[in-house]
Image 1 (spheres, rainbow, N blue to C red):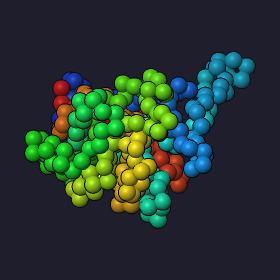
Image 2: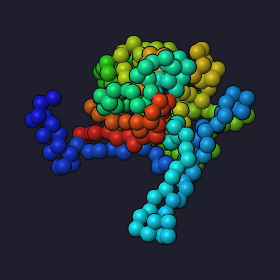
Image 3: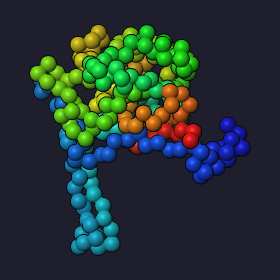
Image 4: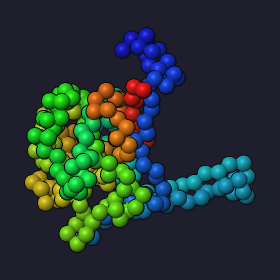
Amino acid sequence: MSATALTQLASALLSGSVKVIDLTAPLGPETPVIKLPPEIAVNTPEVKVHNISHYDKNGPFWAWNWLELGEHTGTHFDAPVHWITGKDYQDGTTDRIPAQNFVAPVNVIDCSAESAANPDYLLTPEAIKAWEAKHGEIEAGSWVLMRTDWYKRNGSAETFLNADANGPHSPGPTPEAIEYILSKGVVGWGTETIGTDAGAAGGMNPPFPAHNLMHKANKYGLASLCHLDQLPPKGAVLIAAPLKFVNGTGSPIRALALVAG
């Protein structure tokens, strides 16, 4: 990109002809966290905020807190080493991923109507190809996001997790959909649900294919995204940068999109 193009982008941001859309859920004690069966894993903790000082005897001129939370909490980034299939990548931790990979074009596949009719809706390669026929092919180096409007449930852990005696019910991709997306050379995959997989993904082959296959390919995941209904199918730029945790498997993020106004 030339200096002129960067100047034009800066002017567009100042004028409002390029808008910044916040794709991030509020992060705090009410943030829903994933619940795994106790026989499988130890669960991530609820978010806790601990006061250090608040313009008082512990710090008369300043306020600050310390936080207790898991790496994969709220709107967050999954690094390749998050999953066993990606554990050996030397550049697979949050501190080693090239920063260039955090900014990329974004494809938004609208599955909101299907997900409203069926919370267990699964995105297939056929549905993706139909989307491409209408909007254009998925480009190498871009993100693919699944819009479901699930973020509108985020105010309640019960409705967001949507679990019953048979397990969680939330939309997501089939293994074949992830394989097809990977064949395009994407940088990663993202969703509006608590994780990057469907609620029923534990019973798929392989289990949890968005995690298993994406991270096996040294690609990234984004979960608990919001406001994908404000993005066009193509044409936006996604900024999704994790904190530079040393050897981090993931991180809460402030996900932002640049969209033509």
